[in-house]
Length: 171
Image (tube, rainbow, N blue to C red):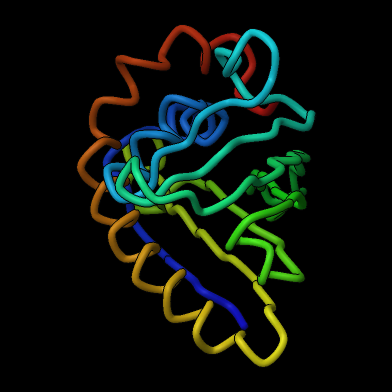
């Protein structure tokens, strides 16, 4: 089943692209309901790349949810849409009821304000056998909370990621 967001964010597309590559943004839009702890030596990198990263997730920072693999791959389409694919997924704990996982975050300029706003599409295809409807409902609620945080944080991304987005944009 698919959980989907389609948002207009008040930030330039390059800043949104950098934000979806930021472990700090990942943690900010996941909290406070979900807390992520890096399981890799050295902790979280400054920027996600086409790499794998294991994290431990806790509900409200207290209840163990399990471990998850973040496995990113970037795609740039001919129309300029940039997509981050997370093809990792749950590894253990309660999250392991999820048996299929594909998370995509796409950024593209908003045609009405191409240098100032971003069309952001966020989709998660998730399967958990007979528990899929229940898993879908949990992720749907989480995605709605995530949307609120994305909208709130996006206006600050131009200043936060401006120098990085100017270096290369489509990583």
